[in-house]
Image (cartoon, rainbow, N blue to C red; front, top):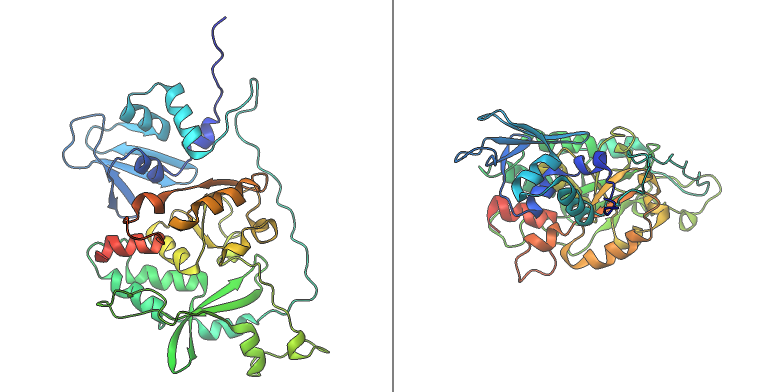
Length: 360
């Protein structure tokens, strides 16, 4: 008898992030509106004519010169000269998509989300307070608006305004500056667990442009209590108030986009940059490495999650998420490692986009 071939989950392989797949093959792509394009491998192509459509659930390519129309797997086979078995084997190993046992049902079943436990002893910040802060007049949005006017920018000023509305980004006055950037942490039930603020260098000529220039960030919950803008629940003293610390930035958008592939990063800033440059994915931030745990990541249950750790954090994220493989379909990307300059051990998605847009 001949050797039995592995069975592959073709649905999942064909729905991998098409741009990430092409990037790992070392093929150059160009932005084409919200899509990308590349030289078509099905005909002699000197002016990129193959458009890559990267919408989750409908990832494919189409050449507007020779009219070829193919799936992600077809494109990999054509680029590398591989058989179907060889292409699927490479994709499965490269992106951590397991093979299937014989006679298995091919589409991977979705797990049913587990309802989060209802905390009873947390204080939440009224959404009305957040709504009063929502504004593009903050230090990070000023950087994004400046970058939007570059010929290399993949986003427009209008896209920044839309991102502010989606994520409820805002402005806050502190220590003489009225443009601290507000990042509300809103859970899947629409409750504001806390509000993080940071300040960014807005000088385009500075080497620290678009980076934190106060070397600190603050959580507003306790500050609002001390200032009297937020009242403790009945019977609680200010020092007894507790705010939930495990909420993900952008968590409230998970129910709004239930079928969209999630992109997971560390900082809210990276989530915002990613959202603007790659809007086909839903960008969520854990806030810090301590939130790489089952409790914090529970809202991602049953989701397909592309993970983009900072360059120096890839081993740690890979190890921690491998222990949570039953929670969601995590695929850890080495994107930041592959694109980082050799002299930058700490390099993230925002650094990559600033380098591409502004050359630094």
